[in-house]
Length: 93
Image 1 (cartoon, helix red, strand yellow):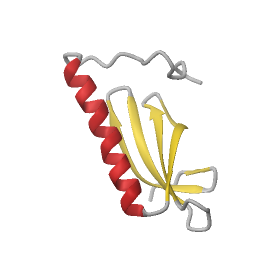
Image 2 (tube, rainbow, N blue to C red):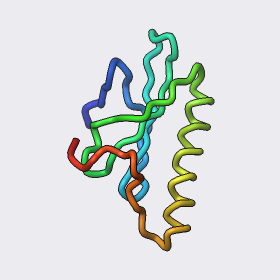
Image 3 (cartoon, rainbow, N blue to C red):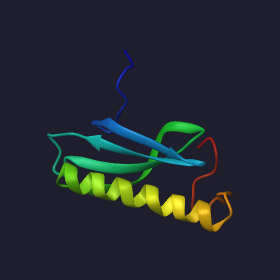
Image 4 (cartoon, rainbow, N blue to C red):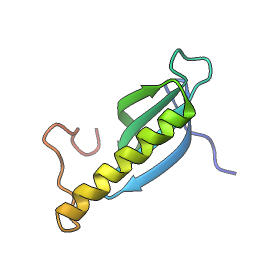
């Protein structure tokens, strides 16, 4: 059984890696915004950033899918190579 990942009180309930980045959905039913989607770098999968906080699981799932699709579209546009955005954290941070 895999240990659950928790970040800032949110339990990660879904995770998807897309190229060099990945996205998660976190859940904390006691938080003012009980759901969040965060980004992570594939080489540091437990360091989360760029959080989008949501009131419902459905809204979080929609945002999660939107973020994944945006990266898939970028990868396709770049010919299969994902280039680091200028404002992304450096690797290993």
